[in-house]
Amino acid sequence: MNIASLKNNIKTKRSLLCVGLDTDVEKIPEFLKTEFENPVLEFNKRIINATKDYTVAYKINTAFYEAEGSNGWYNLEETIKLIPKDCFIIADAKRADIGNTSEMYARAFFQKLKADAVTVAPYMGKDSVTPFLNYPDKWVILLALTSNKGSQDFQYLKLENQQITLYQQVITISKEWGSQNNMMFVVGATHPDEIESIRKIVPDHFLLVPGVGSQGGDLESILKKGLNENYGLLINVSRAIIYASDKKDFESAAYIKAKEYRDIMSKFIQ
Image (cartoon, rainbow, N blue to C red; front, side, top):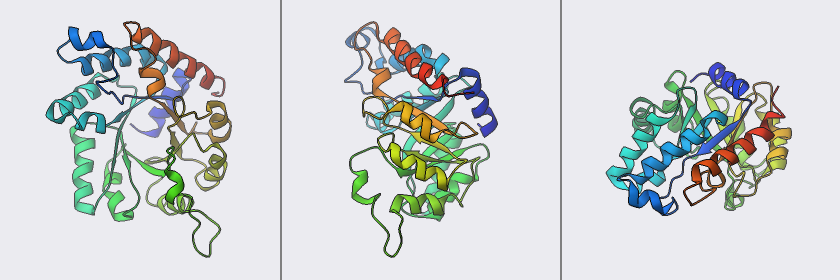
C-alpha cells in the first residue's frame, strides 16, 4: 500500500486506528473453544468484522502465532486474508539480520504473507534494514522508542560528547535509508513528551504508536503532538479492544471500543 492510499483511507474513515490482533488462545471467550474447531481464527474473523469500519490498519504480532507451530502459521496466513483490502497490514515481527537473512525475512512477509509493512530492529544497522526497503509500496517500521519499561535501559542513553539520546540518533541516521513513503518509526504512547522532539527529526514520516489503552498512553496528547500534514500517525490498540469482553458479547464490545477511539481521533482529522 502506498502513502496516498493510506492517507485516503484515514481521511475517508476519519480514523488513525490500528487494531492489534495479538490473539492469545488463553484469553479468548471460552465458548469459541468448545464450539469451533479453530477458535483463534473464528475470534480474529469476528474481531475484524466488528472493527473494520473504524480501523485503517491491523497489526499482527507474529509471536502469538509462531508459538503455536504450523497451526499458528496457518492462522497467521488465513487472518491476513480476512483483512479488508483497504486496510494497512502490519506484520509485527521485529526482524533484522545480516543482509541475505533479511532478504529472506522480507520475502516471507512481503511476498508470501502479503503484508504491507514489517517491524524491524535497527541494532545491526543499514545493511540489515535495506533488503526490506527494496519492495515497492512496502514499508519498514523501525523500532525507535518503544512503549515498554525496558526502553529506559538503552534507548535513553546519552551519546558521548553529544546532547542526543540513542533513540534520537537511531531516527536521525535511519531516516536517510528510506523516505516518508516507505519508512515509519515505532514511538510508544507512554512517551508523549518525546514525540515533539521526534517530530523535529522526522516531521513528515508516519509514526506507529503502541501503548494506548492497556499500557496507559494518553491518546489526545499523542494526537496533539504527533499529527502532521500527512496525518502521520497510526495508533495501535490491542488488548483494550480485542479483549473488551470475554463473553459472547465480545464482538459488540470490540465494536464499541473501536468506535470510541475512532470518535476521539476524528476530532483531530481534517
